[in-house]
Image (cartoon, rainbow, N blue to C red; front, side, top):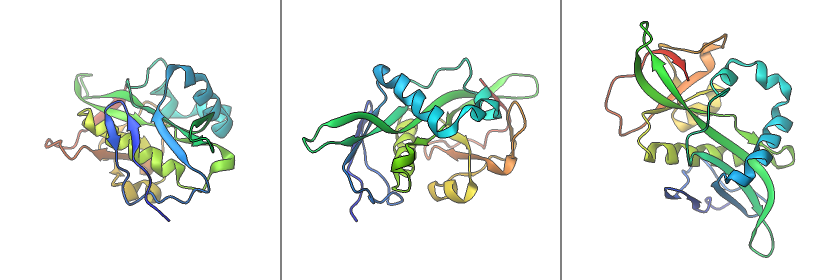
Amino acid sequence: MRPFLPVSGVSGVYELSGLAVDTYPFERLITVEAAAERDAADALVNRVFGPGRYAKTAERLREGNAPLPGLSFVMHRVGRAGEAETTIIGSVRLWPVKIYDDARKVVGTMAFLGPIAVDEAHQSHGIGRALIDVSIQATFKTGVTAVLLVGTPAYFEKFGFMKGEGLTLPGPVDYRRLMVLYNPAYTGEALRGAVDK
């Protein structure tokens, strides 16, 4: 097995961490999602998660919101001719959210990660890990304080995420699954408060 190749992004080239190991039987390319790819990425998310995702509290943070510029990523297979195929096999987006105190004063901002969607025929090859790794690096390069998500602790702890103590979402959620990863450049205290758009 070989390490993932560097991938291109609007802020440069990102080296993937040792967490993600190339187990693919094909070449692949991660790029920033282009405007022309938005509908295909949406379709992938809908196929993977179905209509039930709209009932989740996490969706309240995305409704009426727009992803952070340059922080949506897609993965394509690379064909034999060395060019990316048009079909998107993986997608992840990051969304701007604010942290409010009890007086509804903004005390900080974060990037909300998700959903992470991988085409069913391409799962169990580390595509999700690669997309997460790239998105975290790219987000922190922009100076964002932290990345927040709702996910499986045993999986996301491998990336350094920890329980989002003192943070609440605008609806019911299993708070054991609310996780945060602070930018290594951030030297302030952990943010506490209500997360919203």
